[in-house]
Amino acid sequence: MVRLTSLHHAVEDTLASKRLGTPVFVRYLLETQDKAGAVPTRLARTVAAIRAWLNQPVERIHALGQVKNRQVTLTVEFRGGATAVVGWSAGSARGDGVDLMILGNHGALYHDFGSAAEWNPDAARAEEKPDATLLTLIERALSSARGERGGN
Image (cartoon, rainbow, N blue to C red):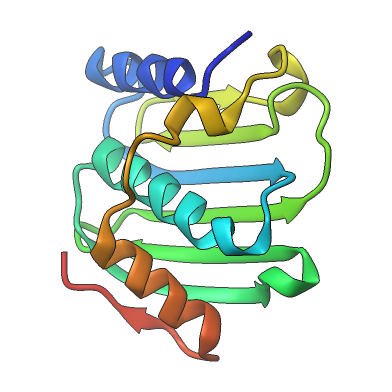
C-alpha cells in the first residue's frame, strides 16, 4: 500500500533535485471518506505540506463550497507569488484518492488517482497534529464568503 507520506517524500525529493525549477503552482485534489469534522484538519495538513514544498508563507486563503455539501475548494495565495488550489470531495476514489499537479518554471510533476494502490490516509498522518494557525485560517475561510488573510 502506498502511503500519503511516501507520496509527499517523493514530491520533496523531486523538488530538491531542482528538475522542476522553482515551483509556482500546486493543484492538490483529494477524494476521501472523512467525516465532516476531520475535513478542516486534512485540509490544514495538505496546505502545510504545500507551504513547505513552495517554501513560502501563506498570504491568503479563500474557500468555496461547504463540507456539509461534500465538496470544498481552497485557493491559496503565498507571499512569494506562488498559488495553489486544494480540493476535497467526499467519495471513494479509485487508487489513492490524490490527484496532484505541481508546475515549476522548468517542468511539471503529476500524480493521479489511478496511478497508485489504495492507502490508509488515517494511518499515514493521524499522529501528526495540524498547524493550528492554518487550521484556524481554513476554518474561518470555510465559514466566510471572503478570503482570509494568513500570517505565517
